Image 1: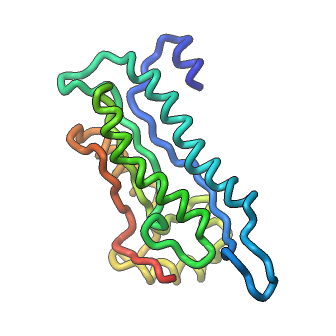
Image 2: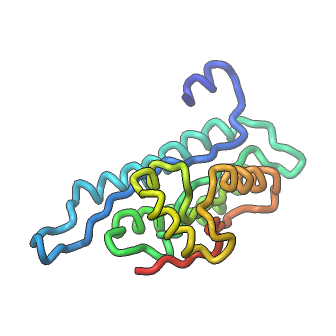
Image 3: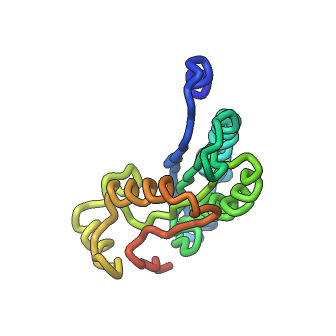
Length: 189
């Protein structure tokens, strides 16, 4: 993708990253006498953290060639983490660790890239419908999850995410921020 952008002398003004996977394993299951798989833990970290960082660094390389706008901005990067960064549930050790890593990279990345004129923010979605992570959940399960959301009591929709991403792109004073998008839900253990 990046090679094609460069070959066509095209510009990359914005990057919105939404790649992420999760696994449900306890650190130790006493009934099965089994430990969390390091292979699965590494897989989550590789996709969610290392993959995100790799794409981001390559995007910066292209954005740095953009002419700065009147505010000196050359681009904006929006990463996606999860509210699991703050309230990981039982069995979410790998996913929460990856989410926390993404969230904690936001401010240092914004500071690092300020000299280049690239802003960085992170969106931390709550429970969203129409995603791979919610696909296996039954309609009854989705209704239960929606009832846990403070207001509005509904699952988030892709359009909710898109509107926030658009706002971040358009508001050049948003930088170094991690923004929860979750209807004020606080997940139980």
